[in-house]
Image (cartoon, rainbow, N blue to C red; front, side, top):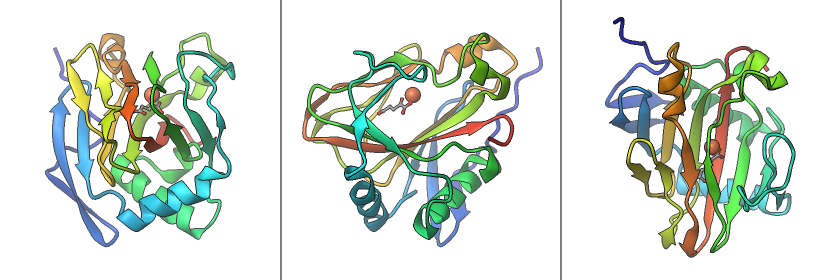
Length: 207
Ligand SMILES: O=C(O)CCC(=O)C(=O)O
Ligand SMILES: [Fe+2]
């Protein structure tokens, strides 16, 4: 069997912009990584502040409101302002996908009891968006959560605790669909405190 190549070259650290982003491999195939120092505290705060007045009840990819996803959320426009553009550039460098392949950065806010039940981030073969499907995800944690809110991969026994400025990365661009299916994940219910994340999805081709 030929082993499958990941999008991201695996390194212990990624020097990007003015910082060194440190990395930990949580799973090989599908590749799942945890990154530290992706965003500074000021950047986390600025993202929360600029998103907070624009939040609405989250919907599923098919635009339906559902108990699967009870957070509130918003999307920044791509390249909306120099601050957002700088963050998009850093994320694209880290994800090793050109920025033109991105979706607008999404911010999610969860209060106690709110969650995002297990799902895949890519679209099924019959969905129109599967023509230019998503290939990878970076979930950036914008605050420390007092209790709960872990991002969990139930088929791999992996749970990532949200900590401010860190991120979890995973990709599902493998030829073997069974590997992609292992990226099933959830944002567990927040128990105490609140949870803010920003999600960046990358697509196979420019969006
Ligand atoms: O909040 C989380 O930990 C997960 C978010 C997520 O799965 C998504 O935005 O697609
Ligand atoms: Fe997701």
